[in-house]
Image (cartoon, rainbow, N blue to C red; front, side, top):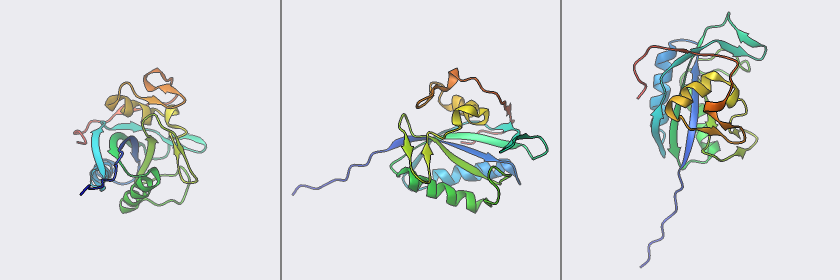
Length: 174
């Protein structure tokens, strides 16, 4: 008897996490643990934490609380929309409210990249359309994947960034 096996293709993903409300570090640590616990997700690496000014639709808002940010690398066989659904649930579990676009938040998790692949749907665009412009994404990503590239843009170590981040002293996330 021949046993049929279903092929399972895992892809690498890069996720960006940010928090500027509440206990930012505890929230990001909780989110990293929750991501690692998603069925069919393997956590590969996590960056250190960086701090950045709040960015709104109108630009930098120095009056808003600063963000803590981190980047994680995972592998999963989940479809991008299924991964996004799981990540959105983690945001809600950590108090995320979607009242204002680019507003203050307890937790934001973005899918930044899916290897060298592109994906576009009504809910999701990969690579993230602004990933290559944001130091709070690029700097932690460089830490975990120094030779990474944004499809259609190029290697992230070659990017010129207009904003900046500061290292945040903390124990490693993993």
